[in-house]
Length: 194
Image 1 (cartoon, one colour):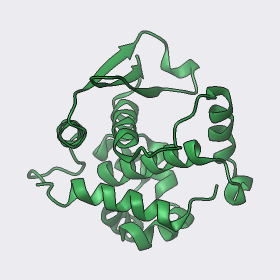
Image 2: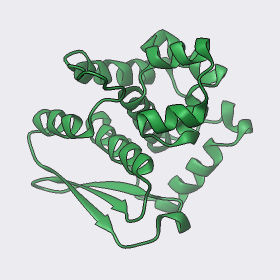
Image 3: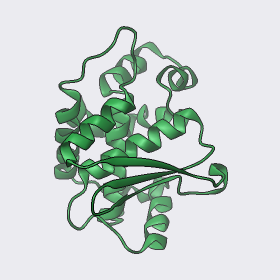
């Protein structure tokens, strides 16, 4: 999927607005979701609420969503997500709120889901899948940076720490670790987060 440099720069700049002032606690590897909620609510100047929906997470492609309402934002998560999946989904939705721009919303959910599925195929590298799909991807990149910073990924690539252990240590999905440690992702993001 094609993501323009200007989009990646926009994403990196927004993430840096939140990460530059972050104070790591002793022994902390992954940044706090609660801290991100607080920072996002301050930026947006309205509440961000979280609701869990009583639907089995393993039977749905969409696991989380956000809705902007008049007086607040609502993040919805499917019930039954693992702790790592729930942390990543919340973080991704918070960054979708923070990174939203005109033209990145969609009313065609079916087309958006189709594009999100297409995006994960190796053949999609050269496809333009539209602004809503790029926006979702940028939010995932931002969530990855918040929860598993690029500089930590560089260290892990050098030392050969296993993805399964990283997923446990950082409380994030193993597939996120595996994707963001690949050479194409590391190389593409190095100029923006490295």
